[in-house]
Each structure stands twice: as C-alpha cells, then as structure tokens.
Amino acid sequence: MARDVLSIGQVRIHGGSATREEAMKEAADILEAAGAVTGAYFDAMQQREQTVSTYMGNELAIPHGTNETKDEILSSALSVVRYDGGVDWGGEHVTFVIGIAGKGDEHLEILSQIAVLFSEEDEVERLKRAQTPEELYQLISAAGV
Image 1: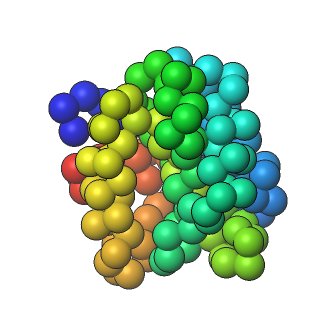
Image 2: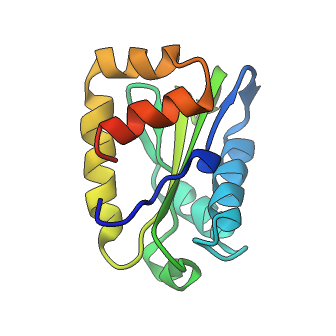
C-alpha cells in the first residue's frame, strides 16, 4: 500500500465469540478510533450487510459501508479482529473480521490484497496460530496489506 492503512492498535484477538452485529460494531469502532471514519460508518456497514453479505469464504468477512455513504470515510484504514470462538455470519462460520474504509477507489486495492492472502488455506492457518496481535499484525503486513 502507498500509505499505512493498518497499525498495531487496529489488530485484536478475542478468545471468545461474537454476534455479527457485535463484530461489525467493533470493526467500525476501531476504524473510528483510528480517525478513518465518522460515527455513522457502523450504520453504513449494516446497510451494506442487509443488501449483500460481506462473507468472503475461508472464515473471512469484510464489513464495509455502501457507496452512498462514502462521505463517512475520512481516510483509508483497516481493522483486523480474530474471534477464536467464531462469529455466525448469516449461517457462515467466520474467524476473521476485517473492517475496511477506503477513500476513493483505494478499497479495491486493499480488498484484492486481503483476498489474495485469505485465498491460501495455509496462510489462514498461520493467521489463526498467531499468539498475539503483534504477531498477527506482522503476518498481515508481511503479505503486503
């Protein structure tokens, strides 16, 4: 990425599980705390989810806002949360919830990098074995995200 969209403070690991709504709220809260989105971005994520599921396969969901809510995005950023207990994402089992805020078309590049990383089951297993947020951050950064 041209700019650093992910910092260590935007990566978390939870031993338990969460509901889809809780996971989306945490993703939005991390992005808001990073100064990337306004407080309305969570609603934008929920709108998107009602239209189309953001479940991507390989235990990954990428909640993000709708095109109509682009004004809520202040800068590009990611949030990465691993739920070891899983999240029921509309009937799909999700372990990784990656919130995305992309200014302009930057989210497309970010999405493609994440899609490549999570297309490899071996990589997903490595991400699941990371013991700390720092280790998880290093693995994701090393993949060029």
